[in-house]
Length: 326
Image (cartoon, rainbow, N blue to C red; front, side):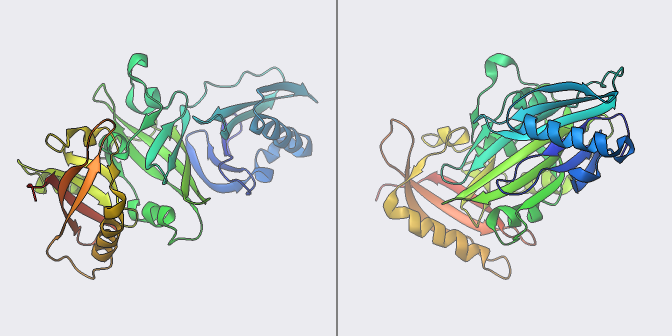
């Protein structure tokens, strides 16, 4: 590990020990904290471990001992929990380099909503302060994504088919300023009556040039439609994670809100998603009618067509439009 860079320590695990996931701009593969900064000897290792423990409890640390200086700063999520710690150690007369761009987020399967921690939207989207919100729907987030490495591995972690419960990769996001930024994304998944995804976003645009995925752009273009809403859907959960074309009225609020599906229709919706996910090859879309409602509206009948994306399961395509009167 390089000597004078910030270390990013993830504290995303509820029961796991903190691990180093970045040394400056370089990613690290869940490295034990005990291996960090060995060049400062046993005293340095002890100081770093103690500082990370204090920062994990919510304290900012800047202390000097044995001619060494250690700094540790907590990274909070929207709920106030500590998802990570930035820490640095050097000689007592040294000054740490500028901090890296890091922020946190959470996603809850019970609500299918993301919760953005302090500074996240400014970091990933260059969003003006007056436009920042804490709670976002998946389409609001994934619609800004132009590259998502190892998406299927990420889906397996969230769905629970990969028991490791953790994932790292690179994603690229297009900001409000139309600039594409690259990030290391670090994720741990917990199950507590539902899925809770806890994550850190670490900007690495200073060492990575944008490399948008052509296949994603081609898929988006290929499924465009003039008369229905079209989205990408995660079939294991039935979560729509991006609208390629926003739904038309009276379903247009779906672009930025998550409607409630009628309790009597929810089972059929989820079983249809599972049936499509279990297909060995692409086939005709499965069609069903459900009812949804937004805050303050009555139930709205919706015609849905759900199909898989060949070679990309459990990802699928969903088309929605107002259902004709019965």
